[in-house]
Image 1 (cartoon, rainbow, N blue to C red):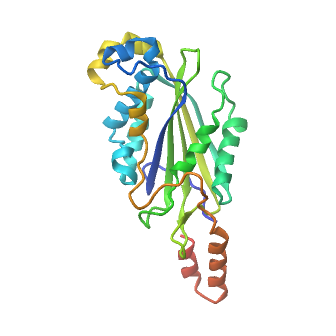
Image 2 (image 1 turned 90 degrees about the vertical axis):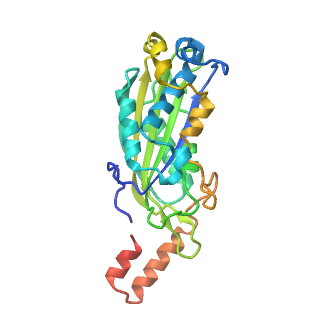
Image 3 (image 1 turned 30 degrees about the vertical axis):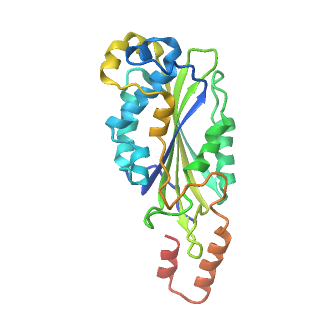
Length: 275
């Protein structure tokens, strides 16, 4: 079994990211400049524009750089979110994930934590799609054989219907991903992974008060553009999976390692097999 996947600054081999809107967006698609930040109906577009801007100035560009993104850029992006005056961090959790291999089990564990372990805020019901989105962050193949320790990052903008309330939720999973030696398919080995979650409540009044200033500094984009910019694009050959398991070969892989040990190979070589 792999050791626990601990969230360590800037040490990820690969980062896979997705942007997601949880809730409703009634923003005017024709609005530009200060109108985006000033008018209440454009709240979601305003927040999306700010988040996209903070990602860009941090050089956190998943859509452009795919898995080649510099892990330090995510650290900078997170720091920019913390520092932005209209975003107040109101929740922070770190929870262990006991993974057995199947992707379904990973999704179920995340869903269980979000629904039953972390107390959901009454105004923000748990969106099951947040857990489901992690399927899309997993690789079918390892583009680089050295990319074993992964950060799966989801940036969700949450808007509750009928209420002028917004928040930003960053949910991350750090875990090991291995390659099956026979099929070259990636899979999740049994391990203790880590789920980290931070929630930022949006001060919409501050955004309204500073609409003119924000419009001078931040290029406004629609919500779809912002979410697309925060989403890792699948490499040409190494497509990402949606609904298939990465770990169908886990038992076979483990049996191979046991057989390798049984026939008298050195402990050093066996350890190399386990990464």
